[in-house]
Image (cartoon, rainbow, N blue to C red):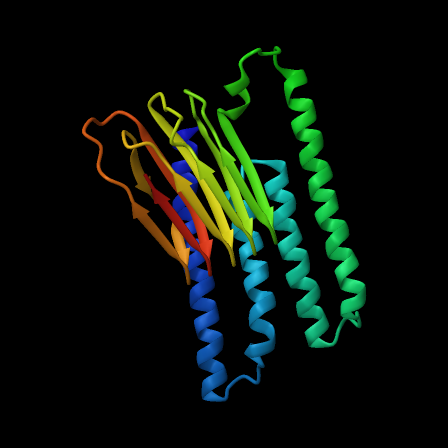
Length: 236
């Protein structure tokens, strides 16, 4: 599984590069007068569509696919509306957004409810904390994990913030944490004996590591993902 994730990364990087090149070409052609585009109107829907595609390519969960698909749908609706092909008022769009958010919550709750049934029941309180799957949309998410076998997971913040406290946790080898922030921020607190490796891609955003190198090497947290007009901070 780890090798498969590494193989997908170059393809995703190529998609990002091609998208940036395409947007740059549109700006250049518009400035030269060869195209008549109002990029001030179309740039935001384009960002939403591109962000949704990146989320779908990155995610390993069904809820992440729903979030990415929702971003693509919202961007497409806004694009069609601004181009005059779709006559929808904002008063009608907001209920659609709320319904989509509710569908995402229902899907995630069903996944969480059915997951224990597929496995044998565990009496360990920290067993459910080995893998994290957190999503914050226009809100905040804070969680402290104390498991001694943290394996990673996925964190999504869209116009909101997520704070993950792992200072009382431990890793057996390597753990991969996939992050995705769009107009939002993610903060991860780790123990002093962890080595943090940032392999993400900031797009008009920032990755920041504020950790002290540990005395011994053996516990590695690998942070991968995308920060679009937002920020990620990892510190101990």
